[in-house]
Image (cartoon, rainbow, N blue to C red; front, side, top):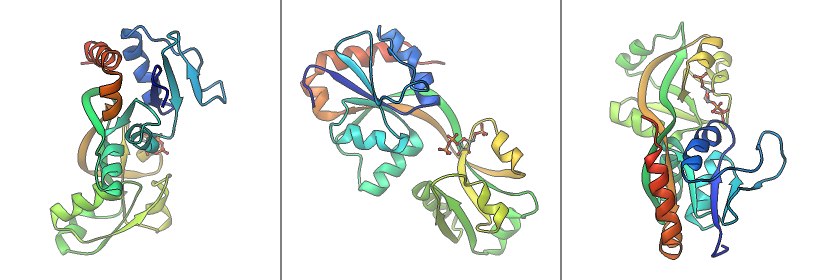
Length: 221
Ligand code: PRP
């Protein structure tokens, strides 16, 4: 890791867009639009700050192992990362940025009686990318589930008979509606957090503390 430069790991899409105002509060403007370039390292107006574009689920890995000094990651991603790595060691989480807000929910086909299946103690087949969150949720409810790991397009699983239910992120609810699924349970609210590499926090203390303060001052209500 270059000792003079701060590397910030972001994922494209909503997290990138909603982090821009926080960066602006720190006097940082990203020089290129990630939707219009194939570059993965984006310079900023500050010579000591650069952005790296990574998959959302890779942000904790980059920051934990020092590929980036700081990053922005959803609570969903952080929970799943800790579960599959045994911990979030070396990953300091100083701020809930209150951006990219959505919820983790259980959804089923409109013609599937979820309540009845739960009451009867039936085994429910649940497709999800978020296996740690789903496992814990159903264990706490005492519901037996067969988890089916998917990497995307979860909505398809109940429609094709692969699963009875899905655990997925819901924001506007439009994706569920378009696929004739209904939300039957909300598991938790999700927002994105600032994550900081512990070693970077010590070695680049002044710059990182200033960034944390600027971000904190601009967190949306
Ligand atoms: C998420 C989620 C749903 C959709 C929900 O996918 O998996 O498909 O957003 O949003 P809505 O309630 O506003 O319709 P995302 O676009 O983050 O991409 P993904 O395929 O990586 O899950």
